[in-house]
Amino acid sequence: MKVTKAVIPAAGLGTRMLPATKTVPKEMLPLVDKPVIQYIIEEAVESGIEDILIVTNRAKSAMDDYFDYTPELEDRLSAAGKTEELEAVRRTADIANIFYVRQKETRGLGHAVWRAKRFVGDEPFAVLLGDDVMMAETPVTKQLIDAAERYGASAVGTQKVLPEAISKYSSLKVAPLDGRIFRVEDMNEKPTPEEKFSDYAILGRYVLTREIFDILENTPPGHGGEIQLTDGLKTLCKLVPMVAVDFEGRRYDTGNLKGFLEATIDFALRNDEVGAWLREFIEEKARG
Ligand code: G1P
Image (cartoon, rainbow, N blue to C red; front, side, top):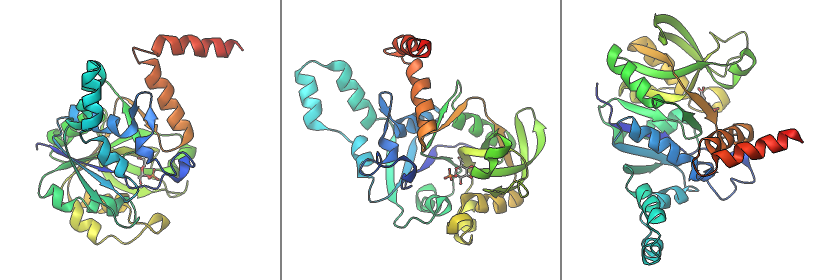
């Protein structure tokens, strides 16, 4: 199973980050020195993905512009001999083959993924949620692709969350397979404490096969009145093998303020230019 295509649903409204996201798409907020969406795209590329479809909406054209050439800016940088800046600007435009499709109505994550049907065709594909930024030695999507190939299965990325937090996620019913890899038997979206299967939550990464599209087409609205990807996967895991990968790495939910700040600090601390300075600054602040 070779996975060369990825889908990035990025059509959410960003209501948890207002007013910052009133006119700037949440995926375009800068995490240190790059917009959030660039981290997601880089993870896909480092996982061997060549073609990427971003599912957007009419308020997100800043994202398409970002991955395009900017002749006027590039000419100026070139004339001024700013080669480093010029390279950084060009790199974003040449990073991958990026395609766009709009989700014309906000009808949920399942509906957004369904919009990728024509792009994906018959091949297995990765899904990377636009809010979930990962810090990992081996890209999390690569960890999933490896497991999917090894087991000839679909795969979802998981980690255990705190028992009081599972109602914000989907909860998995799993059986041990090998080390960090489990067989998925069932799942539900945003369960109450009584409904949850376990504290293993799906965290923003998937490798799926084309069967998901027919399933999503016939999946009625679920939690929040929206078509849920989890409801589609619940059907898929009973039809074809699916594994859950307890991935190595840390996930940040950049769609809310605390997660966004955690990511900002962690990525800044690892940044060559500002890392050492920031550590000193934080220590100084902690001393009061
Ligand atoms: C979405 C998914 C959910 C998943 C979560 C974290 O929820 O619907 O199953 O656990 O992302 O990746 P959302 O954060 O959009 O409410």
